[in-house]
Image (cartoon, rainbow, N blue to C red; front, side, top):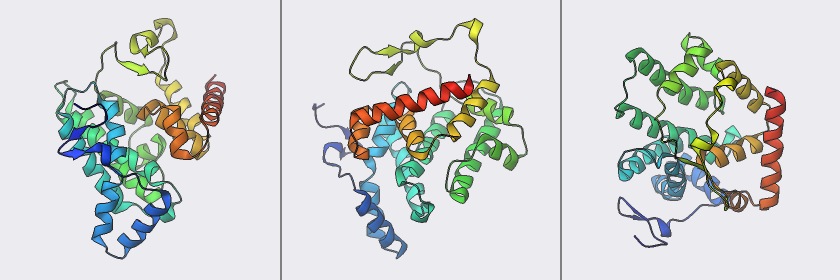
Length: 257
């Protein structure tokens, strides 16, 4: 494989164009006027977003071509349902839908034994999450999902945790140009076990962050982008990204005690 070229399902990813915000808005305007060519351009201009999300599944034992195609299904759904009047960036709206498609595919092909009831609730939760994100113009909270499905927040969290793919303790979870930190370095002390209440408290604390802070944390620690990549994407310096990241993390720490 060439150092600067990655082939996935016949696509030369080194030549993929990345759309500017102005180009995106222009294409969505054309799409609203039933210009199907604009839809194709939106797909091609966001393929790198799908590729960046696939980095989160590097340890999943699935064919990467298949995962890429599944991610593109999520991208198409996001394009068809996105409304610029929501007031959010397309990438912010699109990422959860792409992740949802890939996670469902991985879950349905997993060899782990998960109870049918948990699988069913996880499926209904993902479906409700997609529907509510369109209605609300943002990702719904666990409380809103629980109310929509008539279950408790604990059951929502339990179902979503149960469908997660296991990873190796030697999975690299952080590398920003320095020493790599592996999952085994971060395994919790049993004396300081984090419970569901702490997780819910963290979710409430995250809701208090502004949209840019949430986006940066999501892209850094879920998608796996570097500070350099984010600074180029958002048009601000790496130092600013670092300050926002540290400020947001400190804010979360204070609120969850």
